[in-house]
Image (cartoon, rainbow, N blue to C red; front, top):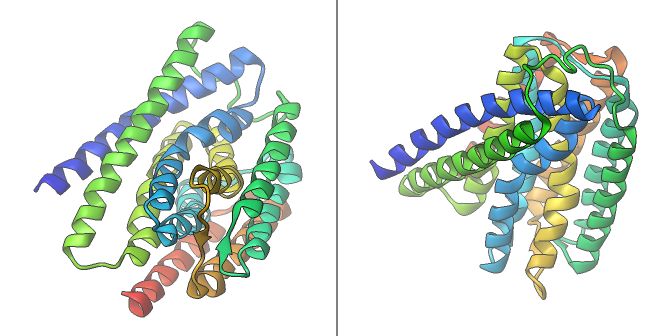
Length: 313
């Protein structure tokens, strides 16, 4: 009963926080002369990736590197296939020129880099430093873009002073992160009660739970017509989950490595690389992710989830 209450309470905080996040993020972007996509790629994507960071550090320090690895790979699969797919089903998701030229190639690059770094079955300190270097380069490229993007939703949010909107953005991120944490705690407790293994929990329950901020933000943004912030959040989170979150996780647990089991490297991580390349190509070819492509992403994720539960439950 307690687990159910935690999960429901977390969901309520997520919904309220996401609504406030979209409003304040879009307004702040207009007042600072930045595009909503840039806000999504930086502040929002870092904020909504905090649950992954907390889980990764906790898992690494407790010696459960498999959970940390599974969480990141599973979360990115959820972001690209389920979250983006649902958003495209609601409304075709437009992708601006800056995202097509910089962010999508960066997303593909860091994913392939992770594949190379984990071929030996683990991510060590050197690999973590390489990933952090990639994160720094990416963030510099994003910030140099400034107000590029030209999304139609720029500056469309209600008025408000810059300090107030910045404070609201921080509050909304806190609500989203706390809500996700409660949701994950409740869901994991329920899953453990059903006898589900840690590896499957990391790739499914925890991955979907820590992607809840991106999912709710995507749905709310799409319904409000603020797709720039939503796309920035998804792409930015996908890049930073690998480059920044995994990098910091390795450094936060000195002397340990993040284990990538053979089934993850040869299965889940390969699927992530394929999904990342396919999504990038689809978005670049038509400057948007269509409803048909969104449906394919969602069906693909459901098929993966079914395979995962059948083979590893």
